[in-house]
Image (cartoon, rainbow, N blue to C red; front, side, top):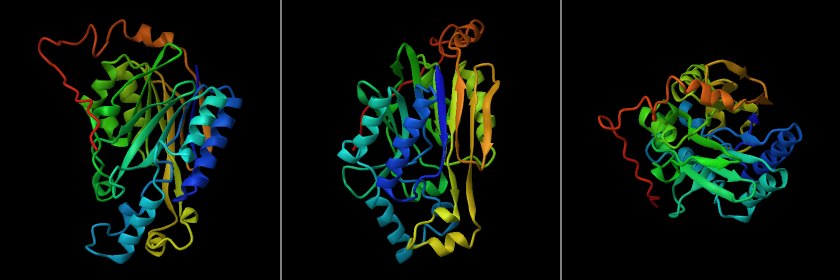
Length: 303
């Protein structure tokens, strides 16, 4: 299996234009032989970069309110015809896609950090909402649920995906291992140094391949008229640097880590390595003790 990690910059806070980027990258990766293509966390329409560098908690601050309203307006309805262009692109290219989005809630006043799994023949097969937004993200995104903690089959290969620091959560990783994941997608806004460490750890712990993918954000990507643009520029011109990396079940780095550059990272995976590595350790199989330790997963979708 040839896999691709798309390390790019979205057309930040522009949903339609970023969907154009996604479809173009899917076509490019497919032309280079990839059958699994992963995009960064909330790539459409982008990560809330301002949450880390401005006072997002400021009570009734008009610029903060306007920034959130902009973000809400550009959020994604998965069932929409507009996002359907991404589903169509996966079908037309024969690619299984993991695409990070800002998903609009049923209330139309909240958003989730969601990771959409798209099968080329069956369309959207999963939407995983990040269980616990991290730090300042909690002022932007709502809490998710366990409905998307599902492993997907693609041509006999078991695929899983998690958002950012969920990859640091032992029980969430275990939920994926327990369903037989062989290739795991870890999405990030863009590494500042930790992506390689946790990717190698998860690969060795789960005895699976890990595709970590992050985006690139710079001041030049701030759209004209964004209410917090001046405050963001005051903190410099570089915010997230990608850090994408692909790792084997042995912990060997197959591609990356790549920082600062916009490109597509590729690796050819030998799935037989997974079985060989599980000969001596299978964390939710022969090396587990379900009589002593157990995990309960609530797969309920909560509005």
